[in-house]
Every structure is written in C-alpha cells, then in structure tokens.
Amino acid sequence: MISKKTGSPEPTYASVWKTLSAIDCSEQAEKKNGLTYLSWAWAWGILMEHYPEATYQFLNEEWDNQGHATVWVSVKIGELDRLMWLPVMDYKNKAIPNPDTRAVSDTRMRCLTKCLAMYGLGHYIYAGEDLPPSSDAVEETPAPKEKPKPKAKAKPKPKAKPKPEPEPEPEPIPDVPPDTIANEEEADNVVQFLCDTADRFAGKTEGELIQWWQYPETKKTADLLDQGYPEHYKQLMAHLSALRASLKESNDE
Image (cartoon, rainbow, N blue to C red; front, side, top):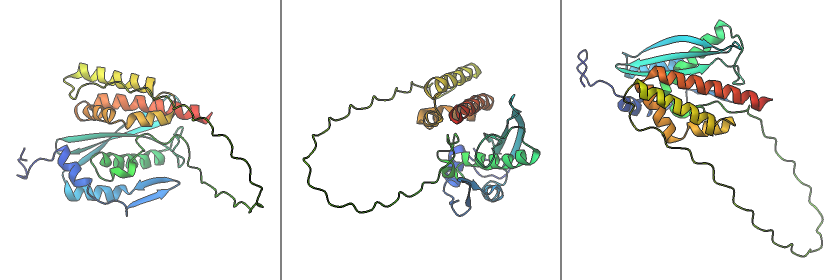
C-alpha cells in the first residue's frame, strides 16, 4: 500500500522488523545490578530516523489489591500498533508496593523501550526476559584449590555402576488455536485457552512459565492477539503477570 501523504510504501510489520532488528544496539546497552538497559532517548531517536511519523501513548496503570502497579504503552507506526506492559519494579526486579510517581515514570520509559523491541529494535537484549527470572543473580565464588595429596596404593577397580534410568520425557504442550483469529468470540476462546494452558502446564515454577512463553506456537498465537485484538492481548498479559507474581512469591517463601 502506498501512503497518500508521502507517496512511499506504507510500513508493514515485516518491513519494520527487517529495518530495526538489523541495528546494532550493543554499544548503547548498559548493565545495572545484573539487568540490561537500553537508553529510551537513543532508541526513540533511532525510531524517528527511520519512521518519523511514529507516535506513542501511555495507557492507564493497573493496580492490584496489594498496591502493585503495571504500566502500559502503545507505539504506532502508520497503521501498525504494538502494545507492551511492565510492572513497576525495584533494582532486584521485584514489584514495588505503592510506588511513587518517579518509579512509575521511570518504568514507563523502560516499557516504551521494550515496546520498541517488539518492532525489532534491540529485541535480542530482552531474550529470556519475556518473563523476569525467578531469582536474583548470585555471584559464583571460585572453588578453593586442593592441596596435592600423597600417592596412595593402587586400589582394585570398583564395579561399574548400573546406568541410571532415563528421565521421563516432559509432558507435551497441547496444540494451539489455528493461524487466524476470525472474530471477537474466537479471540475470547484463544485468551481462555492460553490462560488455562499457562495455569496447567506452566503454573508450578517461573522456569516452566518462561519455557512455555518462549514456545514458538505460544508466541505465534500471542502475536495474533497483539496485532488483531489488543484488548484481548492485554487481558492475557495481565493474567500472566499475576501468575508470574504468584510464582515468585511462592519461590521466595
């Protein structure tokens, strides 16, 4: 499709991804307390160089009954629209109860940068961070060097231990809905399906939840919701956010 304003082709999800994912962000990424950050000002500047018509909008925050907040942002490039969410967290990547306006403001800009990654800009920085890690990073201490031991007399060779039985294969993840979502009713069914699947197959540990979310069929189905039914996608993300928080609390106990 040709833009009536510029006379140039309208951007598509594929063309935007091809352009932005090819940009090297490694020199702009910065690590703090084990987490990787990308400057929102730099990221937005890059987006403006390629797509000056792009806009963003922060949606109303969501608050749970424990005082935790989740921010939402929408980024539009022409007719394209991506939605991203992010809980207000501290430097340990844990949700902050009753965050102040500064914490909310900082999280909004981090959420904006993460939403740009949905278009391809620095997406590899967030690899494995679709859902936050289950525990804080712990520095490994080098093992002490062993003192040389005196040579011992040769001992008879021990009998070979029996081979351990192979671990049972993980329970297969069920099939997901088809490649298209035709209407609101089907979108409702898809959201219910993904929520039930997450609770059933990934509702024990955060590691299982992360593995389930990174499963190609899961991501493909979630992208269909994101592109065609943003409100349903928002419902799905809210459910997964609550599930992740519940698993984190269980792991911390």
